[in-house]
Image (tube, rainbow, N blue to C red):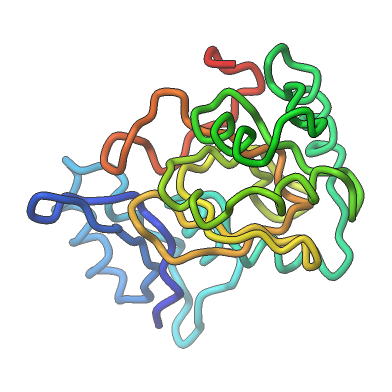
Length: 233
């Protein structure tokens, strides 16, 4: 048995980088422990899961827990929110903090500057895009007006709700934005390193901003804990 792959950062390949992946495998117990023992100097490369009874397959929850150990945001968790899902109190409170932070959301969020100026401010980390708390607000119009096809050239920070509700946490993901669909409320996000795009529902997004350190693939982490008061604001 093999579960779908999840992002696991990047690895060097020739003069560049390529995406690295993590996968959950169901193998004999001795094989799992043997592999783990031979990679003890490379922590986190192989993580044995719970033992299974004879003839039983792995529980879905155990598989998801192992996947989250590699990459905390899973599309399967968001899918279980159901149609018409709304942002949780965790998300709305974090959005409120971001909106009120000095320099986080500037005058151009109120259309005082054009879409190109907002795009330039976003990608260098001078402006944070914070979604609407309800469908069809001005933030959705603002994102839709940006030249989305250019965003794939920049490393961005996506602050997002991770895990299965109600036991969720906020986490920061790094990657590129490939599309935005205001009608469906989905933002396309490709984890750093060139991983396939995942459609992230807006109701789980706290904010999107550029990386002020302007790091590139191989320099930026795949993800890190969310800090609601980062130093670069």
